[in-house]
Every structure is written in C-alpha cells, then in structure tokens.
Amino acid sequence: MIPTQADIENRKNAVDTATMLLDSGCVCFDDANPFRVGQGLSSPLHVDIRPLLGFPDRRNRLLDHALEMVEREVEGRLDAISCCTDGPGVPVAAMLADRLGLPLVFVRRPAGEADPRKHKVEGRVKQGWRMLLVEQLATDGHRKAGLVQPLRDAGANVTDLMVVFQYGVFDAIHEHLSPLGVRLHALSTWWDLLEAAEDRDALPQEALSSIRRFLSDPTHWKA
Image (tube, rainbow, N blue to C red):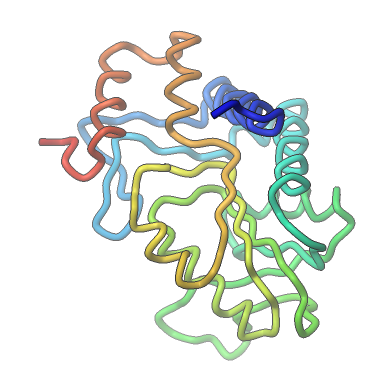
C-alpha cells in the first residue's frame, strides 16, 4: 500500500513528538522497578509530559501537531474540549481549546466517596455538544472510559479521545473504548519513541533491548 501524504505527515509528527519527549526528559526507564500503568499491567517505561511543557518552542510544536491531527482525523465540528480535572493533560487541553477558540470542560475521575460540593462535570455544557476529550496518555483505556460516561450523562457527545502518548501495545484499550464508540488519536506511541531513541542513541543498548522485549510481549516481558 502506497502511503498518502497524510500518512507521511502523521509519521513525521509522531517521531518528532517522540523526539521532543526524549529531549525534554519525559521518558523514564526502570527495568528493576516497573511502573504500574493500568489494571494489573506493568511496564519498564513511563512517560510524563510535564518537562516538555517547560520549553515554549517544543510546547508550541506539540500544539501544532495536535491541531493538525484534529483537522485530519476528527470528523465534523467540535463544540468544546474536555479533560480530567487533574494531571498534565489539563494544560494541553487548555492550550488546544484556546487555539481552537472553544470552551473547556472538566470531568472528575470516579471517586470512592462523593463530595456534594464537587460536580462530576465542571463547566458549561449544552445538550448535544460534540466534545473532544484530551489527556496526557493512554494505556489500557480503563480510566479514559470512566471519564466519557459522566460527560455523556451531562449531555455531551464524546466520540473522540486524543492523547499525547499511547502505549500502543495493550489490547485491552479496544475492549474499553470500542463499546463506547470512542475513536482514539495519539500523537505518538512507544514504537515511535523506540525509533527516535535508536536514531539518536538516546538510551543505552541494554534499555533498548528491554524495550523491544516489552513491546513484543508486554504481558510476559519480565519473564
């Protein structure tokens, strides 16, 4: 299959996003003490985009890539941007909403005890508003699915989720998002990050070997 211009642009932006994450110190690797990244899932790798946000030039490039992805992949008109009330996805969602001139709506993660002073959804929502949910990263999609339903209960139509980074190896994400009819869009994945790391010698060979083992079999990589 011959790649289209959009495919080429997507790949270029994905590797550029991965390169910025590496150069900004957003990538954590610890083979001995894996990170918990989902329900019963662990990984020798973790990404936190906060350091990247401290570089205005990289931050603006990231937003440019996000805007291009929205224009190419999100069908129809958007009425608002939504995000979780906490985490590094908030500034990305706020900047994207500002660039698009759209309202920003917040949704809380499900909590054990309900606080009557805190609403599940904070912000102005009109019945039928089409919203793009924006988050930092996605692993198995379980937590993201928990954010979609409160927005829908408030009257929003959430059909798309965009993340800066997706693990891209856990099949459970389809089990959690597909029944909701939510399409996932990711600026970058671990495959892109591995490509960028190999091109730039950004990680030692031992780490790269462990990453390849993890990506080829994420549920049994430790064994």
